[in-house]
Length: 337
Image (tube, rainbow, N blue to C red; front, side):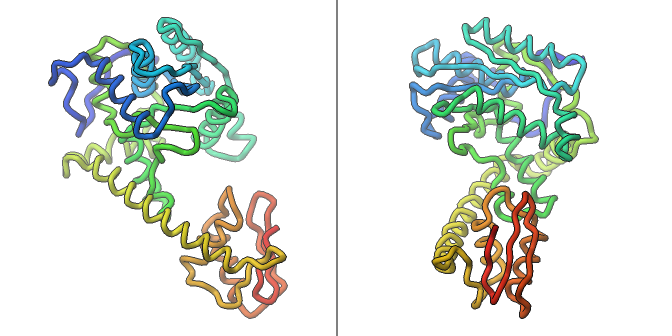
């Protein structure tokens, strides 16, 4: 069963809308507007709203619709919902989002994908397969010149930083969730999840609660339900400080990428090889190689193996980089193929 319209309070949430005299829907719309302005989303953009039916995405939906209704923007809004087929009642979520969209006068594109089967076929986790399937779907709905808006919040960003930290990530992982990546924008990334839920409740807006978000088998759920509340109890405002840390890490990561890009150009030869006769530091060298190889980035272990091979005395070596790519080393020159 999926609950609707009620929630358990989360530790560390912002003050509820009832603490002010403003209409809670006006406040939600203002939050969406602030995010759009900060991320330079054009007032006449063709904007696809990724809506699962959960509270965060329903806040995005109603906030964006309110801005359009009051002529604050002239967005061409479309709603998109991907049914991951992970629960027997997941079609109910799709109908809920479609009905909510229709009530606001918005078209809703719905698609169903067997994410569990996709994960098995690709040898990936359900979370990874679902995320990629979702963004592929959103890109198809959006087209070349549209924008995609998601309902990620500050809590999501903090959770991502902590998860990446536990995985041993470098500075790239400590960036958390970027507010904007190309034409994908997170308009509510500056807002707390609890504040949005309180505002929805005060406005009488119904949403769906996915029971899988309470499943302790998923590490993210334990970070969300146990670790973050504990951190907020120990240090009120911890979520905001983690988000601030992520912004500082992102700035440092951008600077290091600029340094690595300059080093890559300096080492690239006329025939496209990398001159490694005077190796850089391991930290800079790894970043240079990741830039040269491109996405998806090889594992840290493969980068380390390539660094060791390139700096070693032997030549004629080849390192598999994954994704059908490899690097060959000859006379301390690296060719990526």
